Image 1 (cartoon, helix red, strand yellow):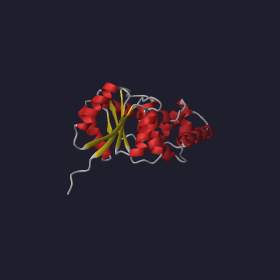
Image 2 (cartoon, rainbow, N blue to C red):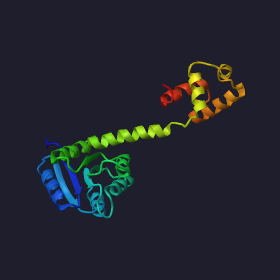
Image 3 (cartoon, rainbow, N blue to C red):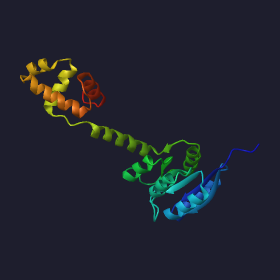
Image 4 (cartoon, rainbow, N blue to C red):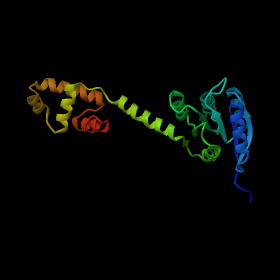
Length: 214
């Protein structure tokens, strides 16, 4: 029986000193097999299409095509090659796009070579490896998106929603607020529309899920 299958790797990096160090580190790892290197995005994509390595290690900001452009093409073409992105950038739309497109790894360029090699092996077996800074950025972006998804309620709608949550009926809310039942029903209708529900119990549950009620 043979040993464990080696992970084939292509590296795309336009900084010669950084590329040299990374190549040297990969060649020292018995489980990794370096197939080729590239110094531009277009060259990297051509090599990946030809050789179909297990993992492509891409600088985010390659000439011609960015690492994200190459990843997008790999995904669009249905290639099995997984991607580890390397960059000094750890936030912004390019990072989010890389993760959204399925980058298996996203590490900072100051990560030590052992960490990068370990990430290549992990990504080849289907794991996801993200730098702590990227994990923090994604968590922040998720929280921001959840805030953006909250419907904008007027002060009166919030007040009525709170009373609904207390179990009060529309006539009781009307009496409490000195408004007509028809006005309360109109406010409730608008509330239901904004929350995407059709009745009061669902409105309370949805409001709690979205953090609109304590």
